[in-house]
Length: 273
Image (cartoon, rainbow, N blue to C red):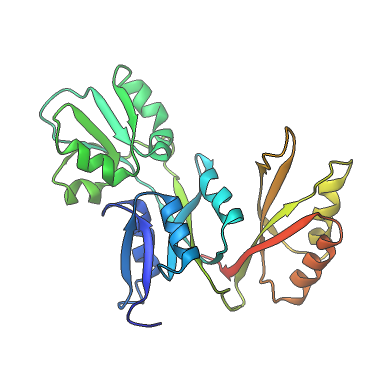
């Protein structure tokens, strides 16, 4: 790794993406964080070579897939080289000088706190922002505004913590992936992410794909569908599995699937979190 190694994350300072990035680079003191306004900016900068790696959320234990990121992974020339799981502990933060009329945050954070907000602030206006830290920065300016963000973000922006642990379930974890341009080497405890497109819907089509993993005893850790935008009922299937693409059994399974599917793309093989 060179001294100019740059990793992108959603900004401004204080986002959960930044926390994930700092966890991933904690053994890389020479790395430099670069902030972007949205997930598209992060991944497009990786694809263009503007930065060396980018970290973005791909799924949350409460709200499921981050669909924008899934679609970007399919469309951009990047590969997943790592993953980080970050416990999410949301707080309601603000200046604490007035009754709350407006609550701001990233759409994912608001969705993860839906029940709390409905019960405690049924009349507040809910507004979306580009990130939790952007919401906190805005809440600095107006006493009637509050933000859903982390406790450390409140401290960073000089805000009071009005309520802690407001997410709808205590076990709230977001999985972040690290994207780069070059595939990671196998370490023996790996995961592989694929996108599969069947093209023609027929009885048993998806089963015929999944059986290639099953009879080789390859464990699937995630399967998710996304609309192909080619027509109603037409989908891409995103699959995560244990093992590296260079493992013989995984390689054999992928080769067999290529004979059955219209498209198979390896999004990356990387060390499991």
